[in-house]
Image 1 (cartoon, rainbow, N blue to C red):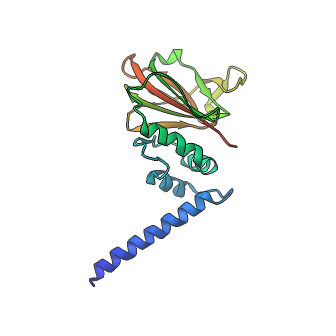
Image 2: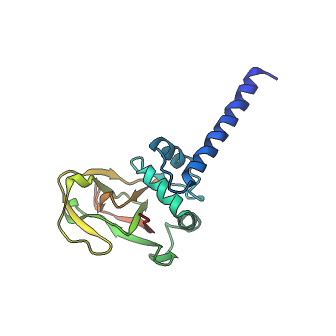
Image 3: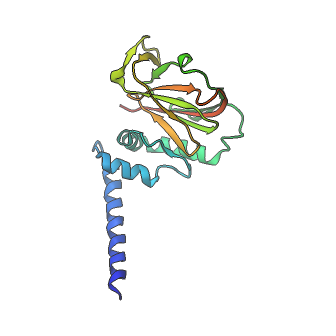
Length: 206
């Protein structure tokens, strides 16, 4: 057998072992994973259950991997539902995935000027926000640049922010906002428009 063939086989075996170790590490009880491991796990998309879009490149992959490991059945159920349903054409409304632990809101929503959109964060739920049609500009805020302007009322608190990074949505990726991911939604991009917005609320486990 040619040396190159052996090298190819050894490479495949090494990759399989690495994947196995990564999976074992992810599901080990209370065992944290590194940023490098989390990014590899995120890129493999074994969590996706057929849902095509990928997380925004700035997603906290460590938090995503950690929350998924703590609540795998719920995340799998949610991603499977999103993969199996026609998100573009199904009726607007709220769709229960698992009682109050996870539900999905589908709406045709109007974008607006940034001055009319509040900066917010959540504690009980993770926000998955996916724009299936149109362009929505999302503001991403570092907590150190934000000042609360309201008291917390389940499940939201609002802020003013001295610095905001804006990212325009695309139908090939989604945003995940964890409790430390302060965000501003429904901001217009080049123009005001109606966007097809899918928001999944997923139970957060501290």
